[in-house]
Image (tube, rainbow, N blue to C red; front, side, top):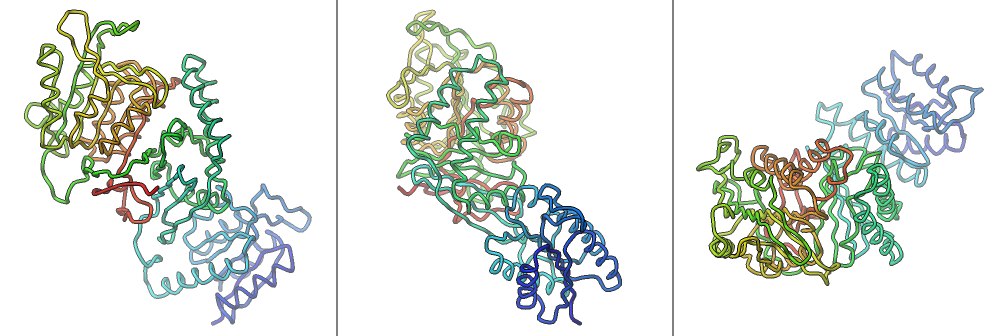
Length: 545
């Protein structure tokens, strides 16, 4: 039996284009009914209830009746699809639009058998879409599932290679098909300088009104958004991808060199939200010859060894130059957020989803010389550490790569401190998965690039000084997500950031933590699991120049 197709369009020229595509790619014997507005289409649908239309093709911005003009804001075509699909669950539909925006994607994606097609390449895209829908209809008639393969429908990986001025997207569309799109980004010298100055100004404005600071941050994010969506192809793909996924199912991976590192990529703002409060934001540094030590849970399948954590608690007081370093009252509690999960002595060890083995070196347990000797001995162990957590004071003098950072250990004389150049600390590291520097300005360029040069695959640091009670709150959220929740590095970092923002509202400190990762998901090769975010892959990792 020939199928019926209802075509709703105000231009006769398109009636012919759509009819030819239906006959060529949907059903050569299809009976096409042509109307020009929503009211006439509703009448036709009512007349065909006994033998309902198999296909509906409508302009998104059709007029509601013969006396009303077309109104692009009314979206009458989308309303028509909602109504028709409610009457016929097996209706296949196509919505035509000049620009497929977020609302169009969201409403089209409510219906499994509905697709949106742009007028830009209507003749080719319409035939391709009809072929897809015809295959879906064939499977439905045969009692098969709608999609030929089961794939995650809600994961999006956005990879931005600033060094190559490219943006890549990898995602699964609602039919389960994997899509990959790439295009240029607009990151010229003027914009780069502008974004770098914006970042410095935001750091210098922490004491201002939070509303003003948040507005400035969103303005910075808008500039980055425009740069990333310079390619219309990438822009359209990003809109589609983000309509299919919640923000917490998106990973933004920014490949960056030393020149691009100061940019506040995490200020990206979409749909009225800062993406960094929902999505994983990871910076991948341009470092070659990485050993690719496995991160956290990224070990061989079935491996049951404990997660090995080294905690360095350096609560010192004294003077460094003109700076007075005072004891941090919440520092011990922050370190307890890890120690409490130790499988031998921790009071929360039974909550851990995997055995955790914690070695702690604390100024409360060791004298000055013994403390330094014990830290050095633990750092140089042959057996790898999964996490090294340093909690204490740090100072960064100078700007960018020309500056010098220091950590502080206790000195032999009371009231004095020993300044340890970060270079010396970094060079003493052996095999480690994550270095967590819970100290001020610990995400400065020379620090993170120095750690990456030592093949440290993951680093957590802070952009600016934050109170130690805030550092405690962030550490608690992060380690509970990792150890109790059993989640992975990216989602745990986002959960801790979101927790900080919820518990300390109207302060900019949720933006202070920074995640730097070498072993991020690869847009071309990573096979995403059926739910949640992927494990960070193991093995060698480097960025092509």
